[in-house]
Image 1 (tube, rainbow, N blue to C red):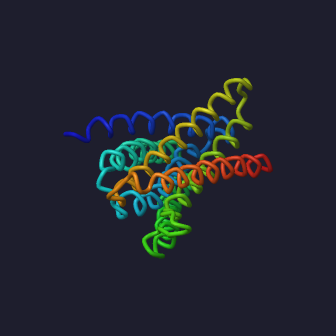
Image 2: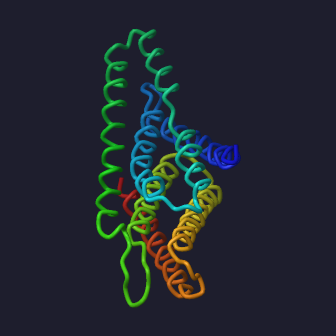
Length: 235
């Protein structure tokens, strides 16, 4: 019962993100095929594979509610099997058997590949010393920072690509970018703090390490998000 509120909050953000992404994809590519549902399911599958390793298997005792909000709430609401099923039935009812089969095979196949790639990426990062290095007296969770950068790149890429393809006032587009990236940076820093607190018995002895990790994470994620926007504008 204690996890209901985090799951509800994560689910609210996930549902809004799914609506925005799928709506943007449909406005860009049209509605003759369920592109929006396919895109959110692929993105959600990759994120689930990537974050399962870093949030669930790499357990942080302080972060149980955080994990529930992200893995169950956000990603659970962001992805949608029911809409995929409904889209497929509609295609069958319209006599579009080839598109229905492409949707079935493509959705299942690409989502399985996406979640596998996410798991592989995360496992590689955490394979070395649990994803933590000790450098100049600092305890740096490089694997978590790398995961944060990968998510930042995906967020920046998808947001920029969709906003550039969809007719939207400039101030609204800027506001959306700032809110999404800002929220992500906030939550990424929060989890790093929880991870650091969980690993350190005497917080005062690791203040410099914590501050350094936060600064490194913010700089790396901000740079990655900016780079993703540059790449997205090439499409």
